[in-house]
Image (cartoon, rainbow, N blue to C red):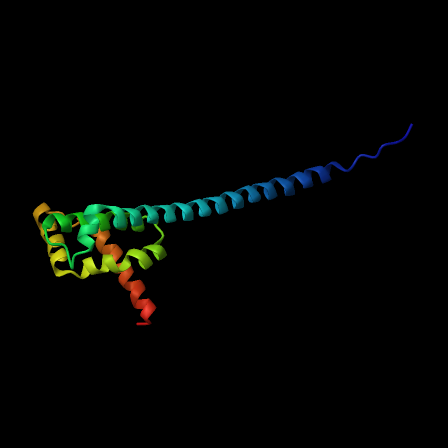
Length: 153
């Protein structure tokens, strides 16, 4: 009969003590990388949704083709659309680089339009609520800052 030598029980405990945290770290890293990839994909999908709406929606197309919106309803449609994009940007749910490249100039044109900004002020005063279109303004300021940095100012 052969004598079997069993390993010291401490090695088993040491292996478990090292292996369990290593496995947990692997799971957390994988989860973190996956969530980052999914968030990036969601941001791009959000941008694509707004880009498609901006270029394919008939009323937005008609407004876009004018020098600037002519009626209060057109201003409302345009600024409301930009405000919704701004909300997504505020929450980090849209790809800002793509937004800046494709829609940034349109948003800044509206932001620099005296008529559009008069509408924003009027709505805030009429509604007695300064939060109207706050995401539109926040987004425009972010885009202005990006443009300023690109120009090296």
